Length: 272
Length: 270
Image (cartoon, rainbow over all chains, first blue to last red; front, side, top):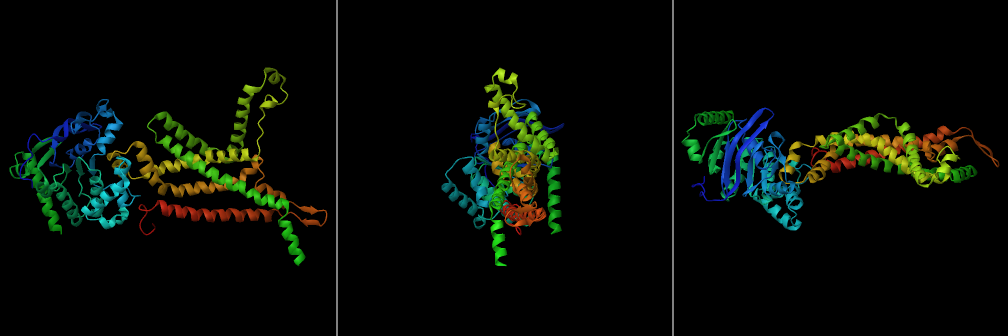
């Protein structure tokens, strides 16, 4: 756990203001503003349907907010149109920004027709146009870091879920991301495989990387985050240091949510 | 006995038979060129069907639904003729004098200068394009379906990492769709191979035409009746040729499948 919250003057890397998003008539985000500063690790928690994944996907415009803005390193992502017809205005800009956001998905989404090494090297070479030999060295180093160096030439379907997710993390790392975005990175994994992925994420957090993490694992959110944001029905219900959120809980809804989460945790443990 | 062998050897290597053997190249050319064009038209048609713009989508789906319904023999007769006359009409507009048109010395083209003579190479190319157009409509459907089978998440990941729409299409979607498309495309390929037996409809002296001629009752002034109606024996040779092509095609498609399916098909097969 980080001992102190970053100083207030630290540079915001990701900043959203007043994000709204609806799918059809269902309003998922109802005006969310938050910022992630350099080196900060933020966990987004909340029950399913609270909008935490949608919020994360708005940061790199996989979902385009109906209103509100997203700024990456003080640069506003340009959008045009109104409401649900809003779309990306500047393809060049979004590609450049996206190539600096390392996204890790719940279901890994490794490219099945490429080896692990090719997966990791693809974006640096194809999108960032970097030198192949240099990228290969770096990619192998990243694979070593997440502990699957020996799987470099295997295909994703030859790996366990935990190994695939670690490969996906290496893929994100190899683009030298400004921010790492994790969308429930362990939800598709068996508990015994979860540990190996969480260990890697913890190492990254301790290195001082800027990370935004959507998770249902309260223990992990507590141990890894600088700040925890609790979303409820599309709004930020409570936020603060893990201490403030988990121990000195103010909101009644958050208390209820944490209770339910810990019961679920116990139930899972008993099942083993 | 040895005289008989010598006779049959020289009979089977006489000029007409050599021409027959050589005419296999037309069939093979039409199949390969037609197959390649069908895949290209299929990719184009599928791209149209996937387009964001409604008019393009309509063109794509109209092509695949209408052309699939037209009998290939009919299209085979229609397209080269229509194309030839369209070209001649266009030339006529440039070169024919109004007097020549008024005089109307021939039914078509309007004047003799506008006549475009088509030889075997031209017909062969037109035949390949016809095959490509007809079977490209089937390939459009196969490829469109295959593109939709590529897992959404992988396409999303490519977009999330800043790949352009074109990079996503070529590096992820098209690269992966082959696994889903190949079984369907191998069917289309076999249909094209079969349809090559229609080449003689376009006055190409192809293997079928020669088999017909060579198999007909045959008299030689020096020998008398060499054989009576032997067409079925010649057709049998063609059967064997097409079966051989089928076997080779299956081998090639299996190899392609193993190559394209690496990482996608289960390990046991990859």
